[in-house]
Length: 379
Image (cartoon, rainbow, N blue to C red; front, side, top):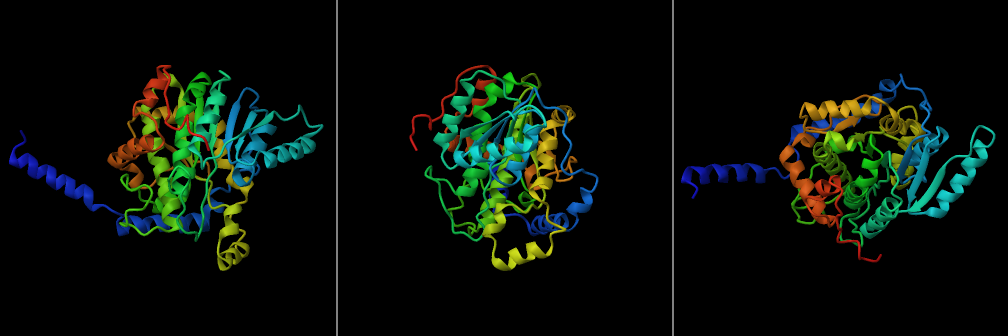
């Protein structure tokens, strides 16, 4: 039986934990400072990088890239294919993907062997689709060397929307679905060892805050805005990645990396208010093109020192996973991303939301089957 002193200590601890319902104002200001700094100086910081980024031969690599029909994902897929990789475009709109492949093959004609690209359907707004995709890929019993979770949404100024699975759309597309995909593809990633999971994150995670008990932002504690939805989902992704990084033993040979592409002119700009779009056009010097924004993903997917760096972080018991900035250098994610207690809760809540058992990773590492509750569901 706990003593009154123990009970008092526990109450104090619980109160202290419960008090944090948002970022502190210093953390919030620091986050916006980092965002402004990146906007103004990202091109200078990345001036040492070539564009397009030269890649080593990737002939022995098989790579799945989500959201690869536009923006950063499209550039990543094209450049990896041109370097010899077997690229799988995991996309919702397969027709657009096939049209892109025909265009790339025509442009590549005469420069080397035909590009080795295929298309598989994946809708991140449906967790059942993620399960079907994973089952289809794992059934091939082949290796997977790189998974790039690139697809994401930022519905600027839009009201709160929910997926058919009942989850806030930013949280599902940017975090929950990629988390489920990463875990379910572990058998193939272990077969492809040394392999990598590359999560395309954002500098916006710096102003994010995650309440593990309110990941849908419906409790009323915080007012939902598209900025809250997006930044929260990106922070949740870093936290989940950090726990996954620690849970994967060295012998599994799977590295987990988050990358920031910088502030990039992509399809997101279509949804911006007209005055902000005008600003985008006025300051092209500061904004990266999709080709420039793809460099951190390509670096994380291909640089030979990445696995060694990830293992060093693991050995040092560093609280967060590897995070590569837009200038292809290691950097530190936000202060809140280092909150190990919250990260652990985000991990557990995420597995619960995507219908996986809490020991899913351990079972898959041991070669056991894991059942997801979305397996039997139809779209």
